[in-house]
Image 1 (cartoon, rainbow, N blue to C red):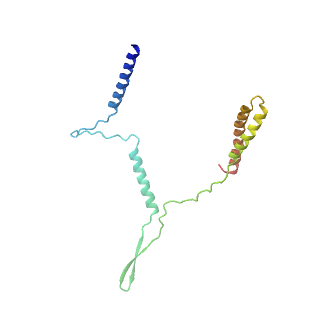
Image 2: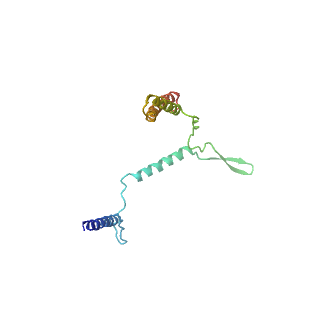
Image 3: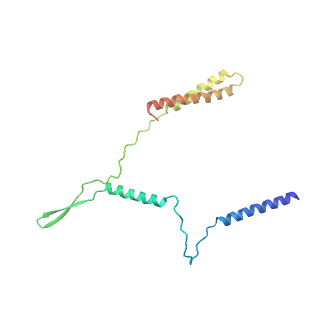
Length: 159
């Protein structure tokens, strides 16, 4: 009897929570005849940011684009307009991409060598359970090897 009441109460509680959450999440639309339509308030300054970005884009275009100059030249049959360009349309300076070093980094090599040698040493030292010794030695050796290799990479300028 208690279980049946508890199940019924639980089901009613869940249904009422779902009904309340659905009814509270709905957006109320303004009436057609209502003169006071609430507009969302810009609390994060998005409109000001967008205006700033538009102004920056205009300034960038204006500084990189130079208008085409026209000059008039006289010919035997009349005047002729000649267009001459004095600027370029380049909008940004691009630098060549750095060549990525190929191959393994010294950090990766150090981690692999350290893990291998640490596993061997750990298995030799721990005579009762060689697998546990190898696992612990491998993790410790890999960490030390990675640290040494990372230091060497930083010295060489890889990172």
